[in-house]
Length: 314
Image (cartoon, rainbow, N blue to C red; front, side):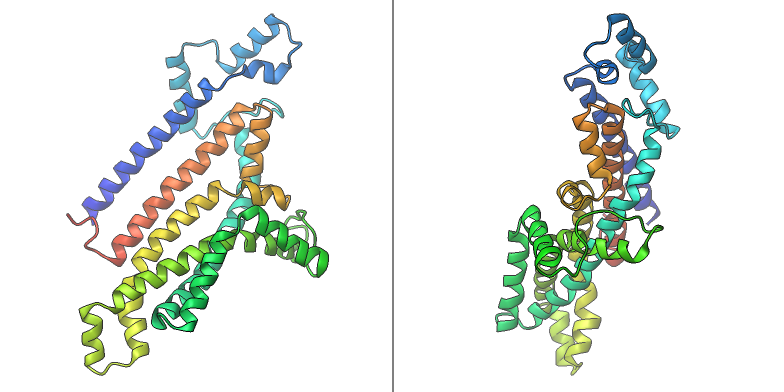
């Protein structure tokens, strides 16, 4: 386990370095002049040169690269070209909102998907299986912007039981905040719940057909105990793996949901930065999402290793 942990941490460090380097290079390849984004098109050349000097853009690329990593290692992501605020402070304000959406969606997807997948596998090729499988296909078929729009139309317009799209901070009004959270979370949950359901069904079917499950049944062990004690844990490897992927995907894919529901998260900050050519903001959001994705994958690998010690033993 120690060798596996050391190897996995080394791979993660290499991945983080590659991500940081790619982000640095890509932002230097983006057309446009950051100095003009700050001062506008009417700025004089001397004013532009002064801003380029302040941003370090007049330095050789190698010096910029070394300076970028030096700041990054000290947690300094620079300041917004538009607002002048530290990017870290903007990220701190928005990160919690996105994380709240994503974590709620994934937890709800697991709560719904695992039992439904198990039920479909236990009742394979029966009416229950067909209903669950059909529902999962339906969940995957609806684009996020269609589902989000429908939910708003139904629950905020036709049946006005939930507030319309806006944002209220949790500390300002917890009840309204939780009510406003329902629709975006449901919108985000549909696809991952469908994926978890299909994966849980497939993994459970595979485990239920193995020799040790047949042996357990031959010994007279009750069906419920066979499923819960023998089949469930061994089918969770696939579910844990796909859950990690879905969590990482949602972190970078909440743009549409945050836009529809007016939710001030990382994705809306990213879009704002792209529209205004605010490179430090774009760089900061991309780095945070990329780093979180890498860390989530690392945690998934450790979870799979715990569930099945044979993984990574070679």
